[in-house]
Amino acid sequence: MSAKITFVNCPQCNQSIEYSLSNAFRPFCSERCRMIDLGQWANEGYKIPVEINLEDLNEDTI
Image 1 (tube, rainbow, N blue to C red):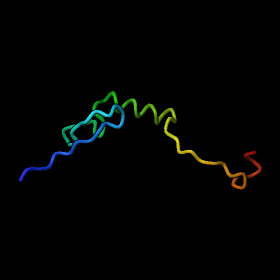
Image 2: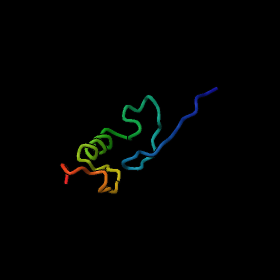
Image 3: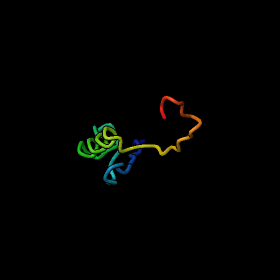
Image 4: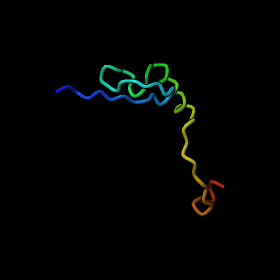
C-alpha cells in the first residue's frame, strides 16, 4: 500500500506543491514565499479587525 500524496497551494503565491517532509519550506513553495510571509508578520501586515469599546478603556489610555 502506497502513501497518499497531498498537494496544497502555497499561501503566498498559490502555486500547487506537494506537502511532504521533502519540502523544507512547507506549506510554502520556496524560501522566497516563506520570507515574504515572515516580513508581513514582522511589519504587522496581518491584523484581526477589532472594534474599540470605550467602556474597555481606562482613563490612563484616553
